[in-house]
Image (tube, rainbow, N blue to C red; front, side, top):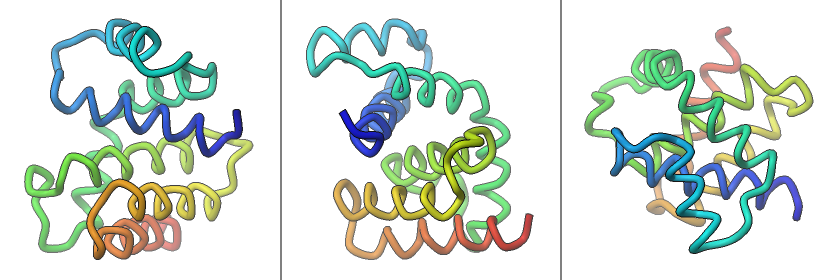
Length: 130
């Protein structure tokens, strides 16, 4: 399985977590593994790390999403943004431009037409300003 697919697994888990906020991470992982596919180690690690740092990522998203309140950002986009920020900040072996590009590709696949530009704008601005 390639890294893009593993990243997509983490995204799917993060999106599910948006609907089951109180459900423990390991339960969400178990449901995925039993009903969708075997969860890769990288997908699991990325999912767990992202959940662990939700508050930090939400502060960044809130700061860079001019004119958008966090609760108004679609859950799909929020999940993609959090995932990309996790890779940008905590994955030493993933270059920032790769994390941004992968986030844009996820948005093109799972979100609306204009959302990939929104995601690219937030992540690009964060990357330039940090």
